[in-house]
Image (cartoon, rainbow, N blue to C red):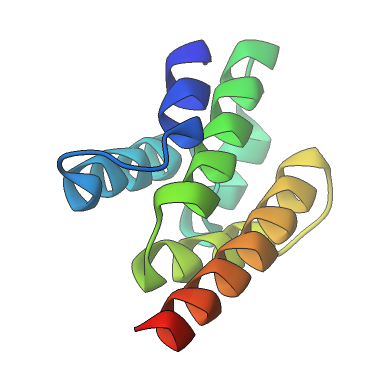
Amino acid sequence: TQFVRAIGAMKKMRDPAGVEETILELVQKLGANKKRLFKRLKKNQSPEQDALLQAALTALATIGSSLSLACLHQSAAGKGATADTARKAAAVLEQRLAEEAVSN
């Protein structure tokens, strides 16, 4: 969890697309997207898994692209701390992408 948080805090990195892809895979494996929602409800995740998932969603706000935005919107559907984290991360990412578009 600390490692994912550290990645999310980095403003510049050598291969942001590769890191983003890895974090998106992690999010899918942890079940934050709609396709795995029912499986996730059936098997209870540990608090550590929830913390890791929330850290990954937050990291996507910092390093993600429009690809991450789609994942965050999917993850935001629903209730609970994970959905709240995804909604906040999506808002941050949307603003960052808009600012980048203006500056380019």
